[in-house]
Image (cartoon, rainbow, N blue to C red; front, side, top):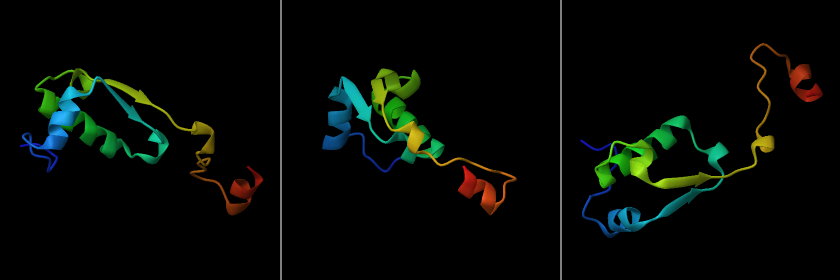
Length: 81
């Protein structure tokens, strides 16, 4: 069973099958589970077990905009950074 609710006979599925290149902008806003869902969907639609169903994926985003993580830091540490 597919993780998506997209029907394999839908017009959207046909567009994804025909796509030569898929661009994902603002990848830093996507969770790892979201990326896994895209991977699983494309593998199912393309009937191909290669990553992303063998499609060429270009990802982009401003990685410097990601906030720092302080697992044991204080509020002062966050403000200082």
